[in-house]
Image (cartoon, rainbow, N blue to C red; front, side, top):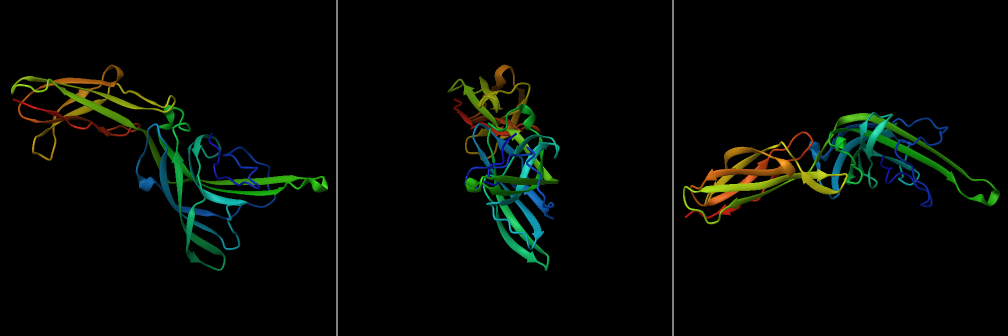
Length: 277
């Protein structure tokens, strides 16, 4: 489980962690309402072997007498897999959100907020993380006295979470495609062999590995044309290998296209040019 990166820290010494239960606070939970939560503009989050920063927007309504200073009090939106009380994994905000007041009453303040979630492959550590995650609003508070000159120190913290909120977020593994058409040049009417490879991110190893038994579409674009047409569908084999043959008709470009799945993002190979003589 990933630690709450911003959390709450006093003197840079302490920080809250995810749902690791802190000491109980005597104060009641604040009356916070998180709404209109949208992660990555509602689009799937495709993560390869590098960090992907994703925008999150939401509306926060809080009591007018509650000041969230992001020093001893923090609020934001996280996403998680599992249940609110038993999370299998979680991604927390990297920094304090940017909030703009949009409405006030005698008792409440409503704010429009933006924040960033950083998706690092090291925290997406199993294939089961490629699924739909849920969103939750969080609030944490810290009261700390680390002045021991009087022979006493104290640390009291609280953590609240509300969820699931909104539609959550679909996380997918990034895919890559290569293509090679040969021989080059080729006689008109001759046989062209088009090979390639479909791989996808392996978060456990930080590399791309072959994706087998997947449909990839072979497409062709004639020289001087702006559009590709479908030639045939090829199924990836051992190590994600793709291989098929077609007849040479005219100069142009061949490429493979992978539409993606519920757990893997789409990919398109750059076109490989064939000179037909």
